[in-house]
Structures are given as C-alpha cells and as structure tokens.
Amino acid sequence: MALKKVGILTGGGDCSGLNAVIRGVTRAAIIGSGAKVIGIEGGFEGLITGQTEELTVRNTRDILTLGGTILGTTNKGNPFEYRQLAPDGSITVSDYSDKALETYKKLELDCLFVVGGEGTLEIGYKFQKKGAKVIGIPKTIDNDLEGTDYTFGYQTAVEVACDALDRLQTTGKSHQRVMILEVMGRTAGWIALEAGIAGGAHIILIPEIPYSIDRVVEKIKLRAEGGSPFSIIVVAEGAKEEGGDVITQASATTRLQGVPQLGGVGAYLAEQIKKRVDLEVRCTVLGHIQRGGSPCAFDRVLGTRLGSEAVRAAEEGKFGVMVALRTPDIMLVPLSQLAGKVRRVPPDSQLIRSAEAIGISMGR
Image (tube, rainbow, N blue to C red):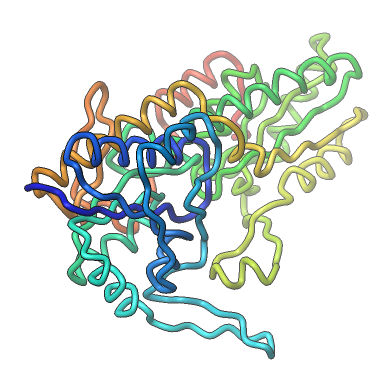
C-alpha cells in the first residue's frame, strides 16, 4: 500500500539507539514512500495530549549518534490505565484509550510505529485491537523480549557495564578489595551475565538463579586462599537471596508507574559479605549510565535495520506485528505472541554453563 502519513512514538525507559530507529523510520518512509512522518511526543501520553511534531530528513539527519530519544518518553503513559497523582497523595487510574485513538484518527495515520519493550508493546497490541494499525519495534537494554535475538540498546548497555568492570578490576586488584557492580535487570539477568563474562567477573548473580551467600563467600575465600585476595562481583538489581525477595525503594515516581523501583541489592550484598570475610568490600551502582550516551555500532546498525524494515512491513500492509532480529535477517512476529511475555535467562542455558565451566560462580 502507498503510505501517506505514518506516526512513531518511543515508550518506556530510554536507551541508546532510539534515535537511530527514529532516523531509520523517517528516512525510509520519506525517501522510499514519499510519506509524511509524525513524531508523537512522550510516548502514548503524546496521543492523549495531542503533542506531536513533523519529522523530516533534515531535522533527523544528525541524530544517529545521539543517546536518548528526541521524541521523549515516559514510563507512566499507559492510556488504558493512566495513573495520576492527586493533591491528597492518592493515585487515580483512568482509561484514556478512546482519547488516544481519537488523536490517532485525527492525525489520519496509515500506521503507528510503537518503539518499546514488553510493556510498551503490550499497550501497542491493545491499541491495535482497538482499531489502530500498529507495528512494534523492540527496544530494551534488558534484552528480555520474546521473538527477537537482540533488542537494540542492549549491546550498548553491556559495553558500558563491561567498561566499568575493566576499571573495577584494576582498582580492586590494587587494593585487594571485593568490588561489587550493580547493574540493571529487573527480571532478566542478560546484562549482568554477558557483561560479567566479558569483564572477567568472578561471581555473577542474576534474578533467574537465587543466590546462596554461603556460595558467594566460599568463592571469595577460595580466591583469597589461592593468592588472589580480590574478587569482582556483578549483580543484577533484581537478584535475590535464596528464600528472600527483591530489594525495592519506594517513591512517588514509581507509584505513578505502578511498579516498585528496584535498587540496593549491591549494598545489601556488600553488608552480607563484610560480616563473613576480612576484606574491604565496595559497591558501585551503574544505574542510568547504562541507558545514556551514544549507541555502539551494533545498535546503530540494528536500529536502522529495524526502522527501515518496519516501514517495509507497513508498505506491505502487515500490521499487528513486531520487526525482530532472527539472525541474520529481520523477520515479522505477531504482537499477539509477545504480549505480557518476558524472555529470561534459562538457568540451564549454554551461556551459563560456559560461565560456570571457566570458574565463574553463579551463587548456587
């Protein structure tokens, strides 16, 4: 079908590579189809408020290397369950999906490209069922989306974490300390696992494998007895001790998102270790550094490919799908197969077997 006007929004947490996707969609739609491209500002919230801007080849030409998203994003703009903070501190939840669909219709869009992770794509699927024409584009630093080999943003986050581990290795060895790096990973430990392997970590703790503090301390002591009185630990924010639960931090912001804010497991782990070993223990929380900054080459290429192939799918009238990397090609996966699903690290995966085979402790 001939495209006349398409829209694009970025939802959920930001990451490196979003602007590469925006640029890819814009250039492919304009150069290939002569279509007008409308950017929806602030994710789905922009469809509720009607905040949009036209995207052109000219105003997107220099954004390939930029981190973040020029359209802005939000974690609390679900039009089906829009949460607002009342003056008395209570939370109200409203269904603004009809209002969002009204904006979509007023814009006369042939297709809406929804760029996001599991939560955003689930909203996109609901929006598709409500009558919109939606194509999803997979984004998350956690790499936890079903149906695709990789999500853009992930590889950059791994490289940032790996660089941090390289630096912690030198200072940890110099001072004979136990160095803990806390990285993102609410329910999936892909960043911790791959960065830990690449960065030479000695212990990796992920949400999928509850850790035993005895096994962790055992590994630290074993290294010290073997002449290496320093250890590097990578822990995902969603990791938990056997029989325990994830560590959270309450705030008004997360109340509006409707999900608990994770964080603090690194400090908690440090206190556990201090009680059991006669070594200095230090914790570094990488936090949003993993989300910011210029995307690596892999994410620039992947973002561009996903954006251009999403436009191709729209031209072919294929909606209600997500463009996905099935190495080496970009394929189409039905959104109905993805809604509400999270891809976690299988505890018996080859990647974990490889880590344990070379002496990395997974805390079990």
